[in-house]
Image (cartoon, rainbow, N blue to C red; front, side, top):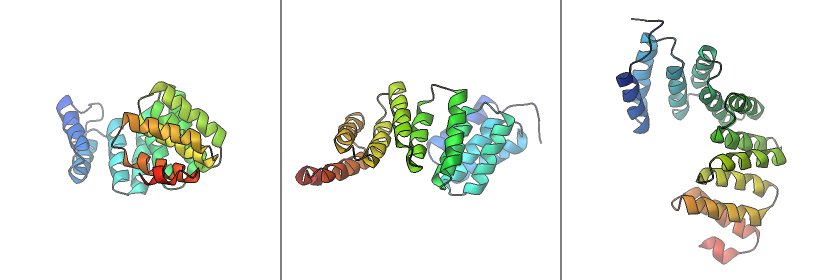
Length: 200
C-alpha cells in the first residue's frame, strides 16, 4: 500500500544497509523496490536502487532511478555524485563533470566528488583542473588511498612519473593491500627505467 508522506522506519533502512554492506544485490534490489512501492516519495530509496542497478550493469534504469532521487530532492549531493559515476563509466564524461560540479555546489566538502570530478576531467583532457580537484579531495581526506591513485593517473597523463611514484607510495602507505596501486607503481617505475624495482 502506498503511503505518500511516510518514510521507511529505522528497521527497514537498517535491513537495506546491511544487505548493501554484504553485497546481496538481488535481495537488496527486491527489498528496495518493495519499499519504493510503499514509500514512493523517499529519495534515498531511488538512490540506493540506482547504485544497485549500476553494480548489476543495468545502467539505463540506474540513471532513471538516480534522476528520480534528484527530482524528489534536488539538493541530494550523493545522488548527483552517483549519477556522475554512471555517466563517467558509460563514457559520458562532460555530463559526468556537470553532475560532480552540482554535487560540490551542494556540498563543498565532498571529497569523493572532487576525486571523481578529477577523473572525469582527466578523460576530457583538462589535466591541470583535474589535478586541482584531486588535491582538494586529498586535502579533505589525506588518508584515502584511492584518492592518491586517482591523482597519479592524472599525473601520468602529464608524464610526471616521479610525482606519480611518490603518490602511489603514499596510497600504499594508507592501504598496503591495494593491488591497483602496486600495478600502477610498477608501470610508473618502468617509465623512468627502474625495471628491477618495477618487477618487485
